[in-house]
Length: 315
Image (cartoon, rainbow, N blue to C red; front, top):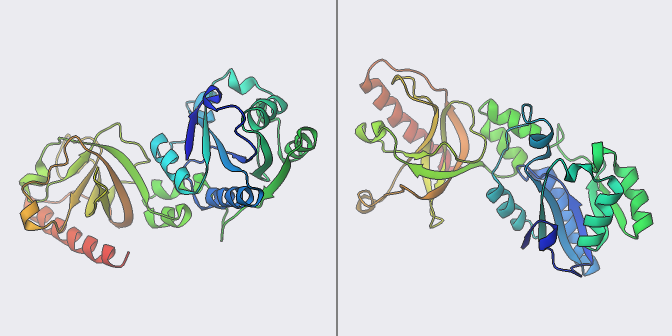
């Protein structure tokens, strides 16, 4: 997939293309249905499949105090969109100045001028242009004016429309299984492994601690079964702890993953410090609670590891 950061990076004459627009936070199953329609239509027309997205999220620019927490970081968004079969992704830097473009200016300059759209695929709830003045009817009108077809995609979902809002709600409740159903894959965080207090190692359960700049929503406090993917793309089964570790005082909220079932010969050489890793959350095991005494905590951690092993065997 070609990736263009800004309009000026798009080479001239890139069309014809089939285009969609969106924030695509999480790239959930609803997004993927739209993207699949884009790719299918592009192949039918012998055109390029393109998506337009924005960074930062428009809400972060217009109402930063109320902006939603992003499900995934920009690197994961680009990688996941590439997996959907797109030929190109145009990432536009969203600013207050850019937001002043009218619906027609956006279509003329970006969709038609930069990408040479022959078809635009969008949801019926699409909004675009200054003050969200553009809607699906406006897109159809502009399609007639500028010579492109508009294809509308209906809301998609089983009992509720798949949405980024629903994913956030599920993660904030610790319902990572529900989030995975909406996303079509486990929720993930990405960050550098940093040194922590080494309490896990002292207890016999060494952990990889994600740095505070890690991207992706942190699920509700608790213990989870999941995976850690290292820089070599090796997927390790892991018991993941999220929270401030109430058994010990003065610990800030953190995400730490204890990799289980490593070969004995690899235990001493297993060093993830400084690596950019991905942590995937598969199932919530239990809430975070304080234990009376270290022995009770160790026994609970042994149980967490066994439950993680059982969950992942059937995942």
